[in-house]
Image (cartoon, rainbow, N blue to C red):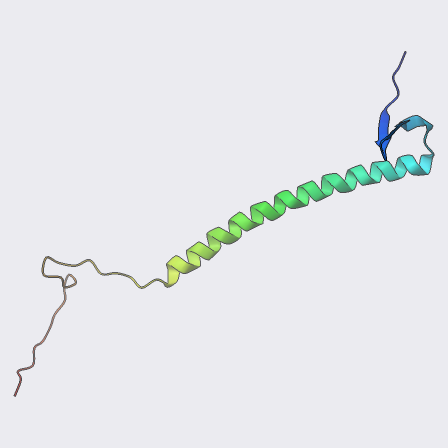
Length: 86
């Protein structure tokens, strides 16, 4: 004996095969739309991760470059001409 597919609508159980063809088509479409929404939500999550990565890269790209300091606290290769005070 083959079991019919059951579906619950408004807390009532129905045999899928007993429903009108149009209703069966609507149920199939709802299931497809739910799968599409899940896929789109996954894409949104992935795009948000990419967006955060690019945003962080931009922030890092505009930070001033810090020169390494020598033991005297001046950047390596720094030349300072001191003008005598008159």
